[in-house]
Image (cartoon, rainbow, N blue to C red; front, side, top):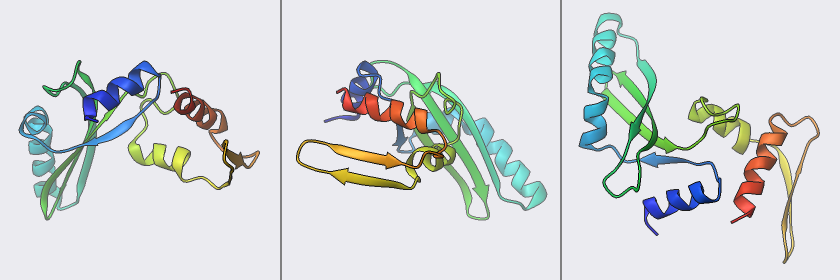
Length: 143
């Protein structure tokens, strides 16, 4: 199954996603000015630079442009751009960094119970973002 098929399925079923994208010439051109600014900042301070921006980008194989978050990092090793495509919007995590999303939705303490018919997640009553977690799980289950 191709990436476009997966993204379209998620969009149709209202499943939020954050998917890593390989670096490519088009994305690097779209972020070139930020990469150049990061290089200048590193040259002036000697400190590692890590900046984020978002843009609308459509790969030729996609059915429509999507939101892409770019992380531009510059260090003694040079520039290191990274890209993710996401449809997160309308939640408290819509403008969150990937690390924040990972901490709030994926790095949680839970008991997982499985049997032949279902998988159950038991979360602590004080679990932060519990409602958001159950919304994501519900959307994943609906497909």
